Length: 449
Image (cartoon, rainbow, N blue to C red):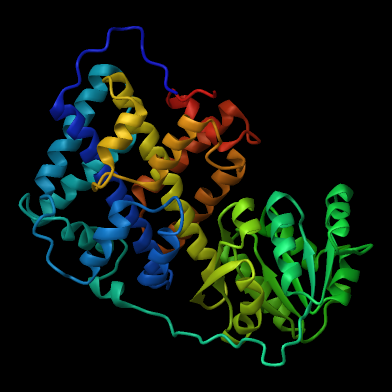
């Protein structure tokens, strides 16, 4: 729940309440567009990006209902004018100043909307924001029509199940390994924590003494570890898999990491005839247990075809193109979810000070442009006491840092996403890197039940 101030809360003003919703929509739409523009600059296509975003907490009314319409250039006469959006955001900023609630994200939205009004005129509508964010990334509208080659996956015509090795048996990796066992003739497992290995063995897996042995025994090697640096050490470092790797084997990396590191690993492994697919997943351990995960994949068509059947046992997969594309798509997805979380935090804090409770704010935005899955998740957590997610603040920040670095590399400014990254970086110094991400909300008044 939220802590109110000691001052008496005055009746809710309808215009100020509307201003909060307008600001949430403005921030969400601008952020989604600037992140997607970065993804387009990196070579991803709009349709699969939206598929990934809308299957996660990055989903919003805008990403589900507005963006496809804008990208196809279908007229949206009911869409608000930029001048209306700017007026609402400025009203919210005035409210935040009056109530002593910082609103840095709203200020960023005000600046971007002002740029849009200056360039396209106050009577221009929502579609001009697509042009604005695309042009900031050095793109034209035609970039939204780009599409990668469609790959028809080869579903193992021999019917032979591969021998699979899995490394990294944390909460997520353990769940993924259990799903991999469905697709495996034999499942070999390794983790530095012996208890995790023992749990898998009790369920039918085979323990190995080291990672080279796992690689030697396996046709397909899968990993889910904290960072790309861990992946590189496991595959190529001292005491790692390299002595057991041989031509014809395939590595499927389910870690969320760096696209450039994925490309580097693919190049090195390719020199010894080993295939590589970057396939970070969207969803938590419960989704893995249920077989409803989404894998975002990059790699050669041949390698992806080999991985397809295994990944389907975990849920479904989307192919984005060459090696590194899966990691890029995962960062796009994670950025939209993270930013919508902090847009919600800022809006909730201001709403609370004005007398609008969290559940009331959710009801106010349902079925409107201001609704986001992040707000829904936060409200559900407040009602049930169940965490929104099980991930540390440090890993949450890692993905924001990686997407910011990617945007800088491609010359695609992401003003809102970078503001969120800076805020998270500052908060981690207060709450500690190993804290659950829900602790980030406490800076905005959220309290644990």
